[in-house]
Length: 97
Image 1 (cartoon, helix red, strand yellow):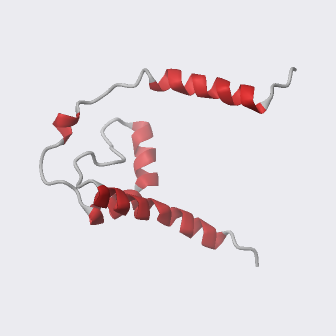
Image 2: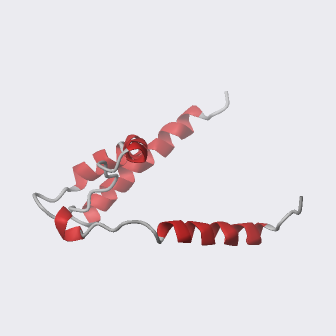
């Protein structure tokens, strides 16, 4: 078996991923912008339940991971805080005794 260098494998993976993503269906954003926009607290909640949302998204198309109808930077900040909580929880468990 021939061994390829890391840059060649990375480039091949990048091309394959780009080809797969280019086939994704796009939903018009205007259909998602109804009702009250989600704010900072919703961003924290949505970020915290990201792993559960991801698994649900794998088995069905009716689950979203990120709310398109949001307040902008504050929702993004809350989402970042909520999703980074998983890293802190995992880091506390991995300490050697």
